[in-house]
Image (cartoon, rainbow, N blue to C red; front, side, top):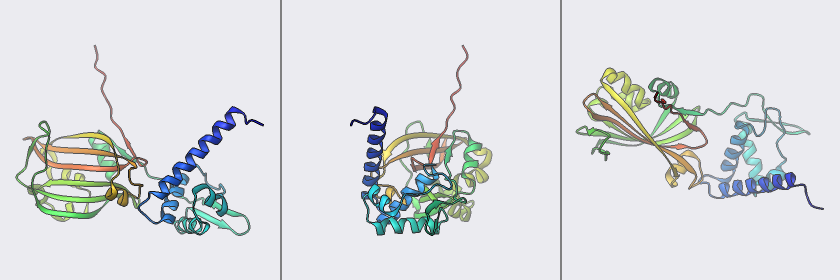
Length: 264
């Protein structure tokens, strides 16, 4: 007997989602049980399973995601250790009432809202070049400073990595607060050091595919969509004090901008 059209469409959508999930797991740069725990974590934090909802059995998870039962068990163990789920003897596994909400990074075009978003975020240094050549700049972006400090970093919010960023900071600015720039988010420190000398911050945004390095640090499959934000901050003389090129997780970031409608 044929299924009703709505049920057939729902089954097709479910099969497609399951196939996509299995593909993401196979292409992950982290161990399979870690990748599965991250996938389940995202589904909990995005509301697919509400607080108190019962998760599928090990057998069902194994079937859904094309993994061994031991892999599914290890993935649930990670979530249990993090307090996202709780196991009830004889009843099953449930989403814990204290499961933390996923923090969404709001990238605003407004300076003050942008600084507020960065509050509490933490950088993890990966690479440092203390005397880098000036970065390549577009004709309208400004004039380069004599030399820059280059830093590649991972940015985290609530321990969740959301961005891999390449930062070029003018050396004469860095020299004014080296300890702060080395350990804190750069742009808020730049505002403290330079203050009224800053002229503007320009941002551009495009969608790209995560390469091997970005995928590894952001815990994404290679080729997953990421948003690249190029951010340039200049002073009143048109000198580029800061250039940041960040690769952001597409599932954690919202890019906000406001366009004023001209009056006729």
